[in-house]
Image (cartoon, rainbow, N blue to C red):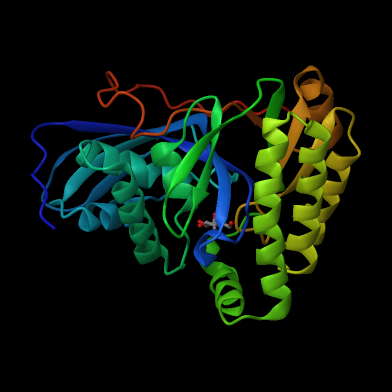
Amino acid sequence: MESRPPEGRWRGRAPGRVNLIGEHVDYMGGVVLPAAVDRHTEVTGTAASEWAVRSNIQGGLAYVRAVGEELGAAPQSVDVTSEVPPAAGISSSAALLVAVAAGLRPEMDGKLAALACQRAEQRATGVQVGVMDQFASALGRRGHALLLDCTTLEYQAVPFPDELAIAVIDSGEHRSLAATPYNERRREAESGDPKRRRHVDSEIARVHAFVSALHSRDFDELGRLLKQSHESLRDDFEVSTPIVDALVEKAWASAGCYGARIMGAGFGGSVLALVEHAHTKAFAASIGRPVLFCVTADGAYVAPRHQGPPRTHGEASEFVGL
Ligand code: GLA
């Protein structure tokens, strides 16, 4: 695929994401419920003799080159400014990939852009990731989560209640996905291993139940489903760790917390909790780890295409807690 060579300096911007529920089911063709969140990565670039990246966060060249190549773009020199903390669980990689795609190919269909970014991530890392993260970053909607069918790529925006704060807790146990058994879990699930399948099937049922509970504003039910999701990821899919389990249990016991679970690929990483707005400060204090509070945001292929001048500052994201 050949794309027009971008003329002059181009820019793109894309958000990180959370996944409310539907973990380790995207690559199985299941349904997931992610949301784009209000932490963004911005990129600017110009044509260059070879791919180059300057960034306020580490790395990124492999991702930028891979997405550029997926889009058929000639080499670019790219400046990255990100408020999406790396390894904090809100998919800084998807935000970077989608920001570059939105900059290089703003006219592209958002679904096709998400698929190109997924292929780029697979190519850059060797990890056979699903499409959820890139899809949420491209097509998430402010005020909503996205109910995404990963077989058909049909999706629906599901209103997300203002009263609920989305908390992302950094477990401090960081790992690069390539160093985890992600591919192994995927193979096991695909080959029909009964325990892995039990997680996949029960998790898909929980996604639908979660959407119903959002519609009926049954926050206690949301919490119960998060708890069950965690137990299933811990016991059947075996992607949790003792450190993460302890953090999740601490969150469950905190006042104002409806529920919590390990989020994303797992093997360390981050914890998602839904917390009553009135309790966010006390929650962060009781957790004793950095907590990032997020609100939902528009994806890169939803927001206006021309997003003003690039920011000049690269401040760290706002963490509450440590
Ligand atoms: C990572 C992958 C996603 C998804 C999750 C687990 O975030 O990038 O595609 O598989 O893990 O739900």
